[in-house]
Length: 508
Ligand SMILES: Nc1ncnc2c1ncn2[C@@H]1O[C@H](COP(=O)(O)OP(=O)(O)OP(=O)(O)O)[C@@H](O)[C@H]1O
Image (cartoon, rainbow, N blue to C red; front, side, top):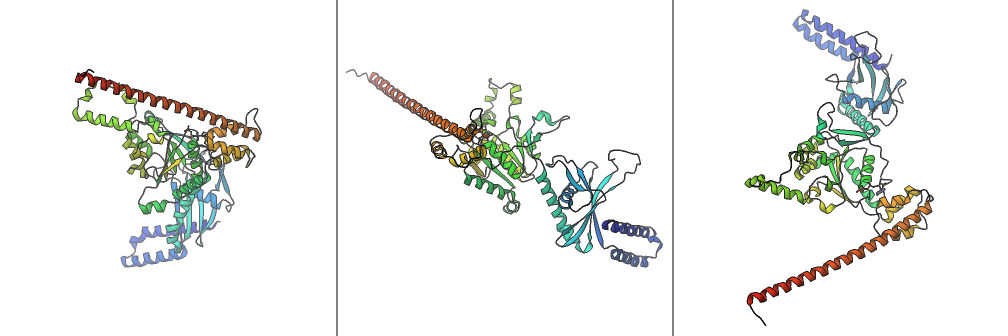
């Protein structure tokens, strides 16, 4: 019989003795009762100096899975599955491994913490009904039991259990498959679907290794993410919610979306892709935020297009204020139809600011918020000020260092004689990494690395020529505009002097 089972048997015998004593206690004279109670406790503690803690699979309401049980099971699967002799193989939802091994029922494993030995066992209580069923019945209760010597009570209850729970949760996060969430329109929040977010498994291969950008900048971002991930205590110390905002800006095709996926893969965080145009009002935004889990990245792509959060909105709000003020404008005949009003998103700039850093944003912690935009200048400064968007990352046109990353990834080439000319051309023209990458992709006639590099040189030269022509055209246009303006000024001046002459009635 295994160690903890022996102690467990002894424990139950002692419990029966104590129970019997409690029943018959009333038949003893009061002064004897005190002594009896004192000495029975001492004897039971001497015989059974071990303490047992039980963690049930389901706690409270029958259907609520006990998080502690799950975390401990994960911890034991990872740390003790090599030591247990009887293992159970299960397919676990959302896990990266096809099967997960854990110790079988009535199996026991030992663990050690700061030199203290303790025992874990997995058991279940048999169903009361004896009817044969292929499925676990509702009476079947699984639990894990931790047994340790009573002199280690403080260490185990104080630190060990906390350590096991933290480790278990960390292992679960490491092993899980990431999710990509998108918000449902609020009509789907009720009824039988009742979900604010829908999700699919997130399996994008973009990583910091495949991301083409200046290595120094990349290193800086990775360091920033590391500091954030390990910064819980620091954030607590300075009294800030454990969240960080990144603003990614730059022309199309410079890798803003690739950066988000690289971040998610690096941090092992789920991604919540928030479609702002589907959110009707600020309260909905808040509800969506509450439903996000920690260890996640909340993304609003193309924030400038998502909502009218720029100067325009301020103007509209001003108009509204005026409306409210005199009540005259509310009689405006050019009113939006009711249907249009209903559909339009009423999320305001202040609603969004609250979403980012109001008290609601602190629920859960460990969240990253990312905005992307192609036009930084279009955004309201309040939205992107430091503190809200803590780090502004410019995703720029392809530089030589970024090209080298692409060449390594796409061609497996670290250096080629064409590299110096490519470096020169990249310095002369603006080409997004997406376009460079497209040239490096194998095509039906251009398969070998050299041909693909040549194709890139041609594209760069073509882009340079186009840019030069465009610049010339623009210069000509602005010259013509200037001329037209001068002409207009001259005409107006002539007209004015002619009018002046007429008014004074002076005729020469
Ligand atoms: N910096 C980069 N490193 C590696 N690949 C890149 C990079 N930038 C772009 N790409 C390639 O180009 C494709 C499109 O890039 P991505 O969607 O990340 O750009 P974006 O800046 O988000 O563009 P948009 O502003 O149009 O949404 C990617 O799938 C990737 O293959």
